[in-house]
Length: 308
Figure 1 (cartoon, one colour):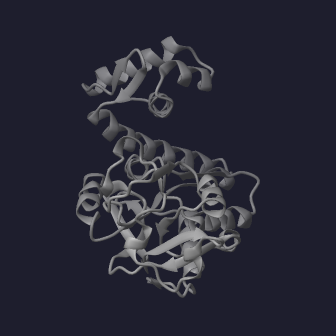
Figure 2 (spheres, helix red, strand yellow):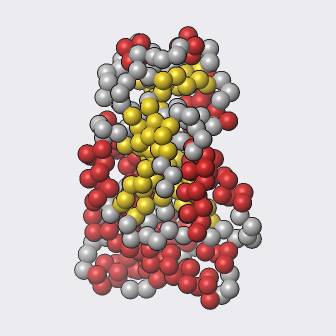
Figure 3 (cartoon, rainbow, N blue to C red):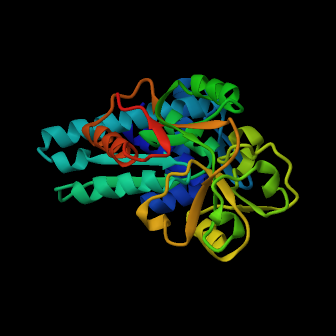
């Protein structure tokens, strides 16, 4: 087994295609195919399922990918250390649900870096992808929420991926609406008042189930549903249309123009936190990002924070 084989494995898994990975790596498709086949033969496993659409990881391949990413990460850090190039080891990859505060913390870390070289990645993505990214070491940290409804299903997914969930804060459920929406002037909103309004939610790809929903109370029936995949679309819908979404009530400065957060009358609460793989030792950069998260939410009056 070589580091080159592991790098090829990671590239093919991320591209979902040997041909695309070969193009990105400036090598030939036959070189990649041979390297993967030799690795499969050495380990005695099938890493990829192959079809006309491309390749997908087997269960054994998914497990191997996590180890491969960890090995390559450590090898790069080792090389950087002995080359005297500390900038090369400044890496941070974040996978998050669509929370403005997690992006704000990421920007703060990026702007604070005094280095000629670093490698940062921010992925706002689905719940299932967040869990997969952290479990396979694609991301160092995942930001998401749990509640009484989804905690049993998500806790099993965390355990299967060897992930640990660290709470950042608890928040009551809030309704986000545009400032011109009649509900924007209310002190509190009852769930039944939302029944006839369009509900905005982030689509969850293959795992588009109630348990993986990014919004609480997703199991309540709604006749008008609009699913989107990015925060800018959600913002435009809230400001210019009549619908709503449910979230924590944590509004950053950038979101406060045109959007109002009103408490929902419910006993349900959201616990927002971060996932880290149990086998990962947090880097200094990751610790800085976590501290930025805590700094942003610590003075917010709508949440109960965990500042240990």
